[in-house]
Image (cartoon, rainbow, N blue to C red; front, side, top):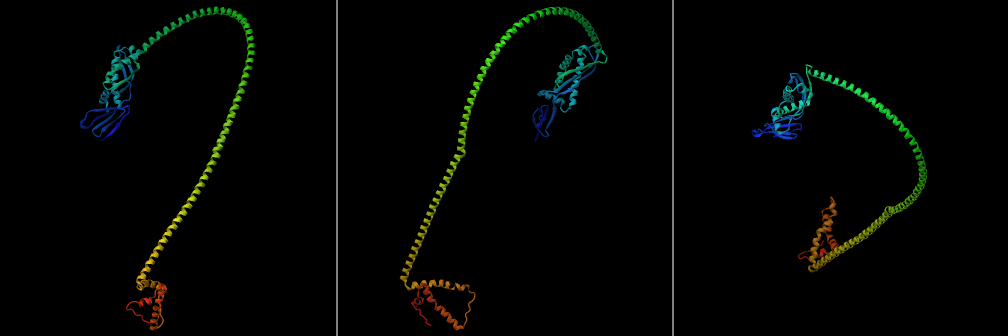
Length: 428
């Protein structure tokens, strides 16, 4: 696996190594790159501007005069891929001060070499040309290291033998001399010129005064004529103004009347529109809701009436259907009961007493159960009397059974039993 590395526009990311013994290098500026663990080396190289201050002390010029020269240089590593590879080979892993030191030594060496070929005057008077020469000579060497010289300027030039000061004194003396001569000549020329100007000024003054007087007289005469014409024009203009003002006032009054008429018409139109709006408002807020409410009440009433009528009809139909069903059921039960009775009567008629006896015998268990039902709630029966009386009482009880059966079923049990072949009646 590996990591993703990002870098800003002021740095270069140098990725070397890789799988299978790769020797290629990858440079990324202001982007990102992938680096494998263990087999890839990732380093960064700053692309920011570096400021150098080269100093050459007591370097002899072509005249043998020792000078001290200081400068300021702005350099940076170039982003060109080939030059960036070159710079990474030479500076990767070094600190910024180490890179500065290498470039500074190169610049100072070229500065010393060029300084030895120039005179003091050439160095002192034309610093820009001196700086350009140093930059042109040093650029190829630092370029082979991947470094670009952005700017190089001479900061200061001085010496310890007062050579420059002497040149300055001679120049200062010559300048002072020329200045004093120039001042004297200027004062002389100024005096002559001042006199000439004063004479010309007096001539102009006298001539000007004469012309002023003439012009003043002509002006006054012309002014009187102008005043007369102006007053006449003013009077005519005043009358014309008053007349025009009256006409304009009349037009304004007419326009005001027209405006009032238009305003009154618009007011009437607005009132008519307001009346229509009120009618629509009343229609929307009172009449239409009242009509809607009336229609709603009428619809609800018709719905309730229809609901009641339909409910009554449904209830009547329900009662009719239930009655018809019950009547059919009763009719069917009656028919079945009548058929049963008819068939039973036919059976009784066919088999005679034997059928009746069989019916009675089938009913005896039920009759006995009904007779003994009240006794089921009796916990204990005590018979008082001797053995003979008990037997008599039991016989009496059994003797009352045939009349009871005859009363319940209408069958003479004693007579029916007497008709059984082989049966005998025992009389007490």
